[in-house]
Image (cartoon, rainbow over all chains, first blue to last red; front, side, top):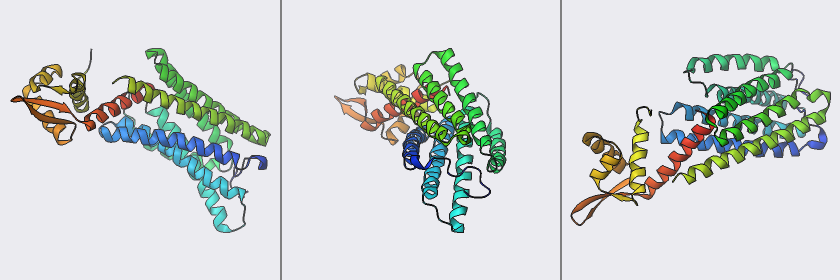
Length: 222
Length: 90
């Protein structure tokens, strides 16, 4: 483990490879939604919300890609200085991109124009990322807070409009939130990390199902 | 009550109207169905034809507007965008 980084390689050795596979699936799901939203933004370039939605999902995809690359590296440990530098940089980028992606997903449902808030939050997340390297719990606790806030917004939206896909979205993010809660307790037992990854996989598969339902409903509208 | 339509909403309404009429419509019918003034109609129609969403054809000395494949693809993508916005509560 890198001496100043608290959470390189949380995965138990028996789970090596499977953790990467789970992250690849999750990355593909968020990448698809990110590209789809970006395509929507290109259709109407004045639609800032679509740009934010695609940015959030593309950031999450980038965070997974960085995590996958870093995890593969930790599974094949060497002692070179460059290796440690890459690990540290990779994990810090993963933390920042994940938290900022989750924050955008929460903030973009707000009716107010929050342009300056994004800048301020990016700054605070950067500071948090710096401190989270000493204690990984802060990363997952912050992720849980952002995800709970986003899930609450989806639940409120569902209660107001009774739209089935919003309910599916709230369930997806509820499951992803639960996975982050499991990750907080990884140091109690490394197998808690495995449970967290499994729950995360279910969450992102559910998100993929929600996305498929969105496309299906759009086709019906012809 | 519905708010003021955006540019993209008006384009969608025009293309959708043509599609619902079996893919062909008279320009005057499109103007009334899409709730547009003459000037708006002229302006938007130029844009739709420049983007290849709608084409003009001459049928029995009458000018008709037809929807293109690109126009149908536009309707699909617009519907997907609206579904996404509805799902996320945007």
